[in-house]
Image (cartoon, rainbow, N blue to C red; front, top):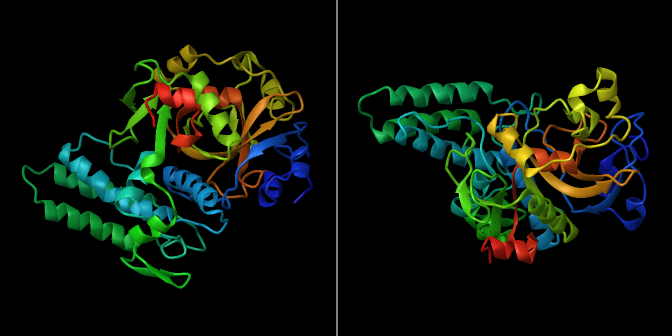
Length: 386
């Protein structure tokens, strides 16, 4: 690991005042020099492998940091597959009740994790890892295909028996993921998933889901119309300026943010450790575009109207969940966020993290999740969040 070339060095050492003053960069031979200005503790980067479970990995990463904050500990690693295992039967039930006219896939939302926590509890990954393969990692491609074929077959019948599809889906999930234990011993103490969740000090009702789109009124809850919101959960709607204000306020006060966003744009380059919205991108030469990832460039001004346009025309979709764990500035004073991803540590020079410009977060955020006390008081009041 090269000196000053990795975010992880700072994360591991807690972002002391000395380290905050040292510049970091996004990749080898880059001219970017980032200074971390705010940060929170986070568990090590994980790898979701060949699965579409980023929503579980990112939201549990967020909650791991919440447990660290509440319990003043750094020893917590929660089971992503516990949430996945508990959520799939609920998706199947919804799909059946909608006669197949609903989403049934591996994707999900932060709301699913909070629902699981509240209704089923939680579990350490050490106790239940969903049949993790040490050699190949997670791979759910076959499982997802089998589950979809099975649940579809029931919707083609004129009549069905509930126990039949439930037994079929449960059997398949058990075959691929195993079954979480009803009771377990962890660090010398006996638990159920609910008693373990209670000991973590998290109240699921304290967390707020926020989005920012103009096809619904601001400061009113609305059902976010993205396919992975299969449970039709409601989000608070506020202007994007206030979303940024909320993220900044949260991080400045020691709270993290679970972040759902679009990562399909050519100016999202995880391998290069950056997500940007360069100004005049479409008119740039290929050489000029590539230069944006080695030398700071001017970012596009993002308006509420531009956000809405890209959401309405499918340019912005809800295709990835991540965890915002810090803020940074480049050498020109540009604002960035430090993002923890779930694609392992080998795919870029930032050990699995990356920097997202404020412009990118303004444009491509679909939703954020955070503790209600992390929201600025004046904004919480507008949303009637107490």
